[in-house]
Image (cartoon, rainbow over all chains, first blue to last red; front, side, top):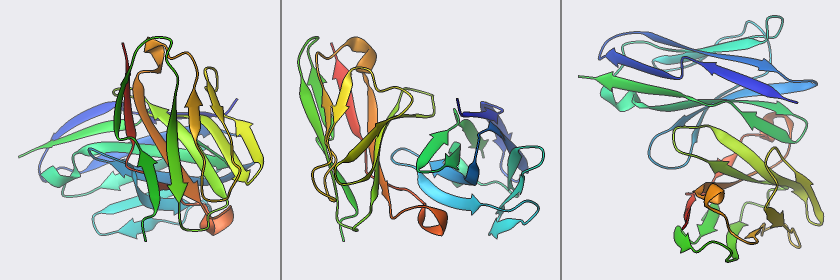
Amino acid sequence: EDKVVQSPLSLVVHEGDTVTLNCSYEVTNFRSLLWYKQEKKAPTFLFMLTSSGIEKKSGRLSSILDKKELFSILNITATQTGDSAIYLCAVRRGSRLTFGEGTQLTVNP
Amino acid sequence: NAGVTQTPKFRILKIGQSMTLQCAQDMNHNYMYWYRQDPGMGLKLIYYSVGAGITDKGEVPNGYNVSRSTTEDFPLRLELAAPSQTSVYFCASSLGQGVANVLTFGAGSRLTVL
């Protein structure tokens, strides 16, 4: 059975802090790993990672995949209150996408 | 371009009632999915479909049924609703695999079973 584990489950920081969110997985026939941000409604896409060691970057957010150790991290630098959300990691095997439990990030002013 | 449209947005059911959550996409996506999200939790896959006429079970299919008679529509049927089915349901679609496998989500349907 596919397994995606995120840590920590929740995190409270102050504006300006840097955070690292973790995602480990056990999936046969791995195709890709995706990160989503979920505020009050539906998840919105952040990154898709398919190759080890290649950092994806968008503004203050960046992510990298390690296919040997089966994990990915999502970094957010200089956090802002607008970064408060649930961050979801998902792993694709074939046509199936399995999500982790998510990390609830709260950024306080 | 509407994307993925779910109806209804909210619904309250009594135990034992049945209902159908509707999902439609206008992006000509082949793959469609139903997920449920319980409070404070991640998304659990209920059913998915890789094309019209093809459906498959996900992690938590019990108590649900789906059909995919057209590319655009992927309704989720709840038979004999139970309190454990109280959740937010998300429909999603993607064009296919590879670089086209990013999911587009609907806005969600909040279901309460009392």
